[in-house]
Image (cartoon, rainbow, N blue to C red; front, side, top):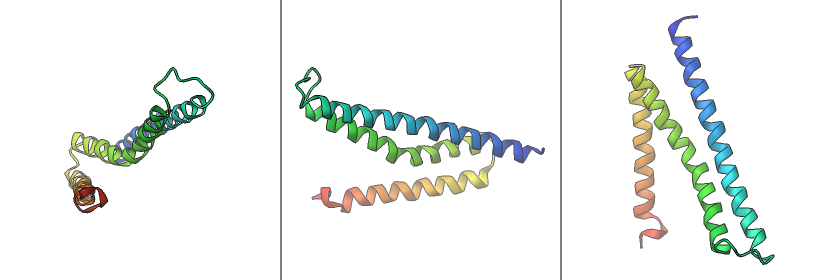
Length: 113
């Protein structure tokens, strides 16, 4: 086993664990929001009502949306740590493109006014 295979294996394990736990966290947050939405009409309004359930579900969806972006940031950190500047540049370029797309979406989208 050479060092490239070991590095690749380490990155794959890190990414797999990150995505697995991130998916569990996102799923749990969405499930809590759904439980809140079911409990509020039944008269259990101890938590802030239906607005809390919508906000909780939206937070879970946001976690799912952010997972790939955070995965790219993790990859960038790993590649920089391994001093693999070629892949670091590629990942940084992809992050820049994603950031420019988000910026353009906010500036030109329906919420821009």
